[in-house]
Amino acid sequence: MAENNSPEKNSIKNSEDPKTYWKNFLAWEEFSKALKMRVEQVRQRNKCATDEQILKSFLGVVSKDPNCPKELFKKFYEENGFSYNRHYYSEDFRGKLLQYTNYINLIDEKSRLEHASQDEIQFDESKRMGLHNEAAQQLVKEKIAPNITFGRLLVHFIAVNLGIDKYNPDRDILRQVLPRI
Image (cartoon, rainbow, N blue to C red):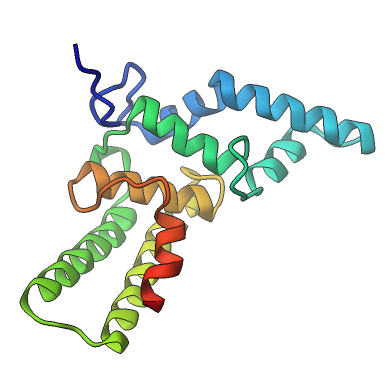
């Protein structure tokens, strides 16, 4: 029997509530192991650091290390999927998400109809990133995401769930390279 690796369809813990999803991630065995290692490292240098301080610091670590929180969150998504239900989000966030998704649709439509110049592509990409950041910042403001990195990932997962984007674990690398081509 073929295994379905689609994040949207492979989940037992797939949650529409982003706060529950985040709690499930923090309780996930792989994240817990990585955090425990980080706590041990920090406590060797600073015995006064609180668990909350260590967690906040750890969530700010961004690298390609498979045990960094961002990479673990992507793996958690790959294994557990994520479903967007607008009722769990504020009107402010939904408005920002709508601006972002509408702009993605506009870019897609433009790319089908005309050949854009390099300047136009870079402008569109810059605006898309700005709208993505605005939606992510709203998630941080509303304490749904702990920081902009995880806010951006959640917005991406929502866009994938809505069928507007495709999940690619290497999308950050591709976005750095593609606009330069």
